[in-house]
Amino acid sequence: MGLMIKERQKGLLLILPTLLIMSLFTVYPLLDGLRMAFTNTHLLRDTVQYVGLDNFVRLLSDEIFWISLYHSVVLTAVVVLLQFVLGLILAWAMQQELPGMSLFKSIIMASWVIPVAATVIMFKFMAQPDIGLINIILKLIGFKELNRYWFGDLHAALPFIMLLHLWRNVPFYGVAFLAAMQAIPKSYYEAAEIDGASAWQSFVHITLPGIRSMIIVMVTIHVLWTFNNFDFIYLATGGGPVNATDVLPVYVYRQCWNSYTLGYGASIGSIMLIILMIYFVIYIRIYEKGAVSS
Amino acid sequence: MSSRTHSKIRTTILAYLVVFISLIFFILPMLWIIYCSFRTQPSIFTGKVIPPLDEFTLENYATILSVTDFPTYFLNSFKIASAVTLLSLFCSVLGAYGLSRFDIKGKNALIMGIFSTQMFPQVLLIIPMYLIIFSLFLLDKVIGVVLGQMILVLPFQIWMLKGYFDNIPMDLDNAARVDGCNIAQRLLYVILPVAAPGIMVAAFFSFVVSWGDYLIVSIISQSQRTATVTLVIQRLSSALLIRWGQVAAATVLTIVPTIILFSLVQQRLVEGLTAGAIREE
Picture (cartoon, rainbow over the protein chains, first blue to last red):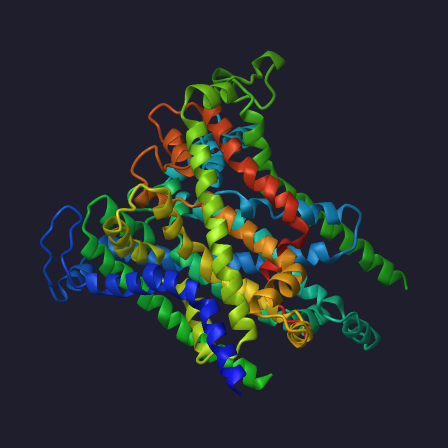
């Protein structure tokens, strides 16, 4: 018995370095950030005062905040939904045992590993007017009048940002779904075939339930990552043209590091956290319900 | 029977169509920037896809490597990413082992807590983090950037490694314990060799995340001393007059290390990344 208690303490000792770093650089900053949301902290000013709910009142009438919130929600919803569907299609294709497929599988995740800053430059380069590959191809197929800088276009900029998210993450979805598909016993499919099930039916009734937990993990984590994502938009457009691509993380960053209003930035960040917490709670409810029923 | 061969052919055609479109969409942008990194500035500005041979050049690379400070930034990135990898591996291997093998009080809440940090907006965390690093006198120091980047890496890494360790049979530990191995010996000689592929993927993950980080380094770095490649390619590509040939060369050099590492772990990557989501019963 004495040995067990000692073991338990050693277990705690093992997670101590992680707990230390996480408390200092995640838990404390989170609490302090929430506190700052109620202050007028300014990066270049030493005096800090509590201003109650002033920052939040200011938010309500801040047009750019509402635009950013709207973009954040739309971006996250559209991107995660498309990534999920396209990832499924990609996984389905990779599951077919065809010549060349293993080579394809080995290179397809390359887009996920390269720095976002590099991805952004690649696409900015391709989106250049006249000299960018996209505009060169459009010209070749007879759409010369579409020639423009795509990230600078009021209507095309946000869809283009979505395209960047797809470019980076769809292969990850595909490969992850494929891994989960391969864990489904082949006998299930054979049994379904004997019963006369169509390919579509076995996909809906065997494949989708079989990869359910992977779908849940991928979607959850990407909702959080996409909603919190800062660098795609900041590096590609900075939120422009004229707020056409502004999202909450970029707006927070600009408030803090361009306008130096840390307090106001923190209040927007707090709203982001609240939104994600609501999402998280709803998701856990649904997940637990699903776990009970299945 | 013929309807089955029919659907087989249809499946093959559809699958290859998906592969073809994917190759164009996912691979072509990378090939294009590599291709253009070997072209002269005037050549790129002609807007031609296939220029005459004499418009190809190594000059962009020569300029980036010898005239600009790019090598300094490259070295900074390398230092920072290596340090992040070592420190985060140290923490996450120990932590994941503890969470996987020991009966710690409040363990599930702790795992949930670590996972839920993924929900915290990083743009919010970096505000107080900046002030902490400032008061520790670590602003514009490599170690300051390294500590800051930990929050990008650690939670996911622990979650992933814990999943990996969970799939290693407990019997191995128990046998070693009976043989009189202590925790450190069990971890070093029993778990690590079995978990090596997973740990390689974890190392790869932290290196690549650190190498690609812009957010943290843009706040903590104040000078050439700690600036990384992501900062410098961003700066080059938002200049008033953009030299696309040089930007392309710098971007390719930024991508190369990640692609080399990717090719080393590629076979294990998915298995490692998704270990937390797939449980072998």
